[in-house]
Length: 153
Image 1 (cartoon, rainbow, N blue to C red):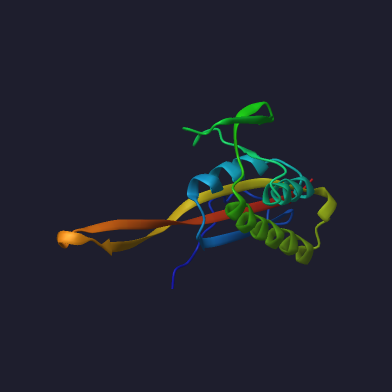
Image 2 (cartoon, rainbow, N blue to C red):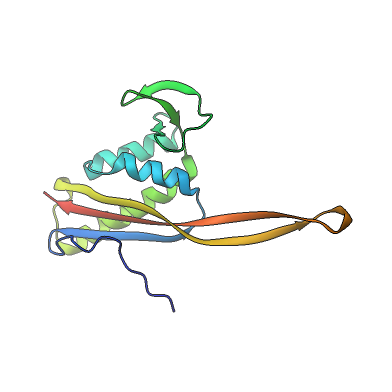
């Protein structure tokens, strides 16, 4: 059985609550950009952002993975914007799990901030489609680990 570790070990266990989503079937690049955008925000604000992305009311600025992304209405003065709905739904679930873990620890939900949000590559599912003349076309799927930590301030 695999044993999972959290990537940050310097968090205070009394004031923080953590949650992780393992082997999620979402885009790694979308997960990285969403985690970068919600980090260092209040928990309520981060949840509202993800809900707006799911409803296509607000976009996520793409800062690293932005090739061939057309310019849209600026979000935080950044023109390359997308609406990764599937990844936002999965990360919202992890964020709600972190909130529930904080409630179980007895932390005040109104004073929680997202201090750590990270996406890491997991295993790659390798599949092949048989083609004519003995060839095969690969279609791989990269799974993603998402880690979220909230801290009471």
